[in-house]
Image 1 (cartoon, rainbow, N blue to C red):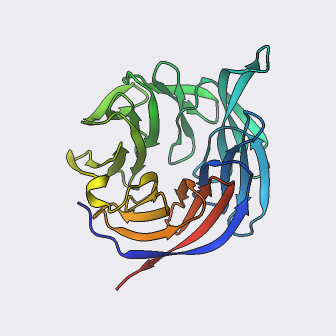
Image 2: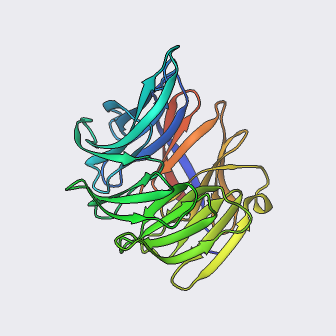
Length: 316
């Protein structure tokens, strides 16, 4: 296992009421103070992205979209726009999806990528390339400057749920076919593959900054994979936790896992499985995300509220 982590504390910076409906996803910019929360309107099938500032609490924009990911520079945000057709009787049928690349603060669209599903989205480290889910269990890799596809991942035979770029721009993908792959998108050839035994339900994926460690969660099992040395460490969450938890997010350095519990939420060390922080909540926590430096944690709730927490490590 990895080195054990110190206990941590959280200090509530502020709470923001984004909606009366459940928060389905949250995110925070890697390089600016912008963040977002996504919710579905109570009386419609349309989802909305509320972008705000974690320092000033100022609201920036509200745009339609079911998913969103900030670019590494933080000035752009890739959002999924689902196009629907209303049939007789008011029934909405999904027609197609596209990716809109918007200004992160104004919400203005700069470009659009079509022929995508948007089931997974990932920016390259330099922000020049975007990986987006496509039909037939594929991921397309696009040049964001020209809006042209420059590569693909084609070796999965079930839905790809998670994707993240390595420092060399190879792409890590997790699929319901039970495999974790590292692919060269330019050639569509698999560089490394890990077959997951016992589960085909990927729930989380994180890559260390140097790309030497890939942490993924499948069902209730944590896998820490060192792809260059082909070392693998695995353990079941139920074997190390005193109470049941549902994973929400992994810290970017792979040290911490935030879980929803029936009482609220907790944070556990990925190295030891020890719970290093827990807190009760009257409202179910439904989404979570750490900032890139791990100093901020954003949590979305079922009542439409977003809590912004400062993370404080307690050493000694």
